[in-house]
Amino acid sequence: MTTTPIVALDVPTAADALRLVASLGARCRFYKVGLELFTAAGPDVVRRVLETGSDVFLDLKLHDIPNTVRGAARSAAALGVRLLTVHAIGGSDMLEAAVDGAGGQLGILAVTVLTSVDDASLARASGRASVSVSDEVARLAGMAHDARAHGVVCSGGEAGGLHQRYGESLALLVPGIRLSGGAAHDQRRVVTPSQAVGAGARYIVLGRAVTAAADPSTAMDQVLAEVQSVAA
Image: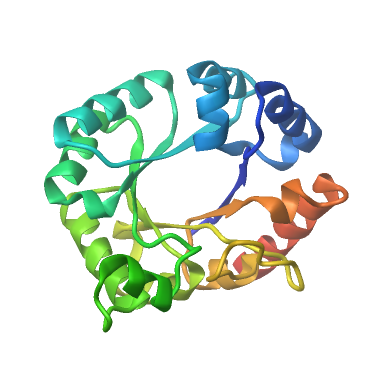
């Protein structure tokens, strides 16, 4: 299995995003467009990133009635993106609608539990004192698998167990990647690139570990070397 690094374009403008894409050049050919950038610049920024020869992961975390999500997935497929996120908590019907709307042209990734959440915050949000992140991730991943989703978004801490259970039938995308010694920022469940690869991640998302580095290109080189050392 090959692990693909994706750099998050979590910036406020299209110009900022395209500068980062240009600066990384051949080091990265897969980028995440999330809520901040998509809200500011819309589908046009996706088209402009695609024009550089890069792939796009559209991280909108859709959560709505099935018909609306089906239509949004269809529109994302027409736009030419490779991956699209929906919230697994939206339920089986919504997940199946997203897969149907994608029409085999893009991969639907079901978001399980955000990496900014731990057991305590999940318990507060759910109102269930005994709930655990690992149990909830496993439950939602099973729902995504049954709905024929391409994969799930989970932390590196849960990736190993999911990979052991589902193998290559469920692609794992792991965010919250930090280089060794790097700050966790607002993430609570973080791993290094090598830990994520070792746990079976097919995709890893690199945010501030690269984009906030003094030299993003050097940071990206470090990530690539680490990924390749585990894969070798």
